[in-house]
Image (cartoon, rainbow, N blue to C red):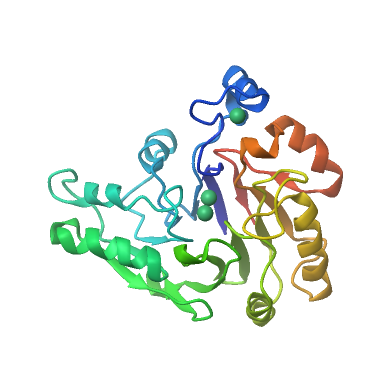
Length: 274
Ligand SMILES: [Zn+2]
Ligand SMILES: [Zn+2]
Ligand SMILES: [Zn+2]
């Protein structure tokens, strides 16, 4: 399996629009990995995770191949993860040819996507309602087994985290969420060992959490329990992702902080094969 991080920031991006704080000034000046667009990732070049307003930018910057992309899993209905207005670009007036797009979202995101998809059928887009705890399959021949589980985040956005299995590989995409609820732990235990876990790290080392979002302090606790439950081990790749300037640390500073714990700090363009 391969995951590529296209965008790795929280809602406001880094630097945040308008902001001149130390982290934002540093990001603007250094560029490169310090610049973060809104969160999105893609698995094996074909399965999209989230649909932020920066999707156009990600497509241009990373050369997304829309002859391959058929499915998009939505984590929740916050605009940095779901920007349905841009689904309209799939209609005839904006796109001359493309594969049919299939979105999957829990209730709140589903309702918003439904409006857009129903508004103009020429989009060739479809949307399916998913529910926490109910497994479904996506991709050619249903090669991805997907288990959405309840996220600890704004309830009115119907937030989920995704456990995704393809062949003998498994990953967890846990953005945006605080420390997991008990029913989420029960679901994770049904899955078994993870090869890669991508953890919400909005607050960098110690700001925020344990509800709504996490920081490294919370993530350490979650990983400790995952280890006890047999969900992660020495071989599991741990990626920290979804950063905000509110965490008060730059990419470089985060790398230095977590290096000794073997955690990877995400950046736009990071690609990991596992
Ligand atoms: Zn977010
Ligand atoms: Zn700032
Ligand atoms: Zn959110």
